[in-house]
Image 1 (cartoon, rainbow, N blue to C red):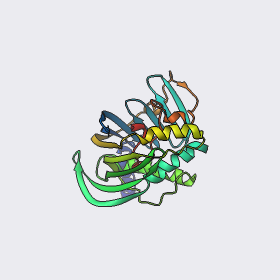
Image 2 (image 1 turned 45 degrees about the vertical axis):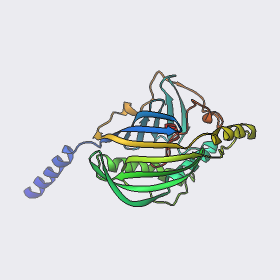
Image 3 (image 1 turned 180 degrees about the vertical axis):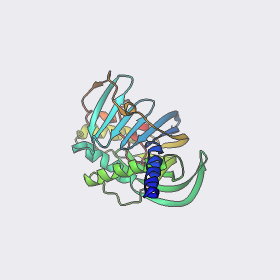
Length: 269
């Protein structure tokens, strides 16, 4: 009996000594080229449990799978708009194209070492709102936070599939992406609810644009306990109405939130 009591006590102490579930913070450098135009930027992605925050130079996107909400923030204007998650109506149709393409991955048969961690290359591609794209992305299962990141992505993808927003049958790589190289060729834009005249003008403009190539590389990845406030809406931000389909294609407008890992983010372009 004494041995059993000691064993139980030891297990209890060991369990209480375990650290609380930690999040993962990924710092990325991104280089975008379109013709003679280039842009370099930095972005961070934080994931903990069922919450994710993506911070770019222009916008911040917070996804809360438990609350079923996605928030797109404009730090300069101190405004935000809210999208149900999984999305509904026209937004669901728009996101479906990006999401289905993002789930269309196949192992490339090559591997690399990035930021000190081994990763496996996957090839993918498909059609998004703005055109066709190809992508090579390197996923690591040994980098810090790989399990946490993969769990969030899988949960996100499952919710989209259950809602009928995603139907992709390709392989969803496990782990965390350490590098992404993609090429987007602008094509015929198809946005639900957009007036034919407006769509024609946008397609004319898009046809003149050179392909957009994006190279994203992880510079630092670390695990640490994140505060709830890290994923909260700032109290001094004002809510605004969700932009219509046409306005989301205008220069400077807030772009579509990114699909699950893989598809080139529209926010990046």
